[in-house]
Image (cartoon, rainbow, N blue to C red):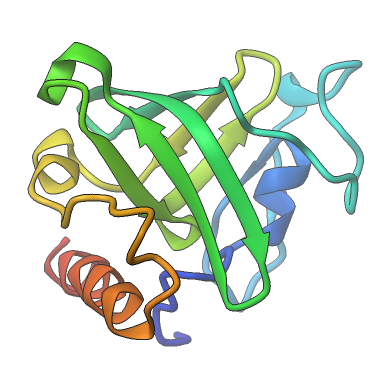
Length: 145
């Protein structure tokens, strides 16, 4: 199994729609219920802003911002009243699958793991030390799950 990189898509096909993440050494398994006009084709860029975000145990919020920078792919999620309007940074490595028909991004973390994550700080995001802190948090939560 490959080491977890929080800033990289675990299964880039998941973003293209209708795929479940599987063992990285195997081919992604297409989910036929996501075929159709709402599922973009492989390699098609998708704007995830506005998509709802679901943890393994319930809703987190909605995507406020998304980045496809080569060294730091991430989603900024507005949690609304759930954790007092706090915005959280989710590296794309936490994305399990994307349901384009329902406009939902499913992440493989619990609500509590997201709630305990380092606060999103747009002023510090360019600082490699800050990104290392956020990445380390998610790497550790991946090892514990």
